Image (cartoon, rainbow, N blue to C red):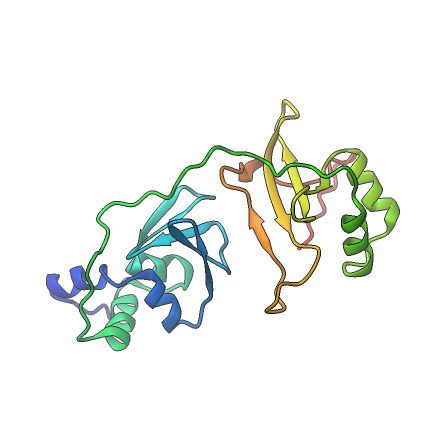
Length: 203
């Protein structure tokens, strides 16, 4: 049965910083300009007590983050926040936040794809012929400054409207760099357009 909370409790719950909430959930994040970016959902950035998801153009506060991404009912979210943060007061909260909407700009291309081939063959075990086909169709390439693999998506006019970078070498903490470029159109993601009526989806 749903519980009823006083208005003061509901308002207090929305002031809890997203950073503190993610810490309590064991989640990780990285600094991204004046904001923070959630590692598990890398299209989500947050600032103080509000978050914004670039892929859906939707956002909210600490309560809605729990209901949206952790499958909790509203009263369950409030109960969790009370259990973790009861008695704490938070300052400098945001009342309106929409993440920076930078102009979509793909990373500059290197003059070769040596790191891309090495990474995809040795680490991902993809056949060179397959990689070569994607390179020739300009669906993947190597970024100039960091040597990342860049996966791109085109719209109906064959314009690049989506780009996702993945590092070709591990970071110091053992993880791999991953980033979807700001402004990417998720309706036209990285894909191979086949010639039959079979749709094949890969992780």
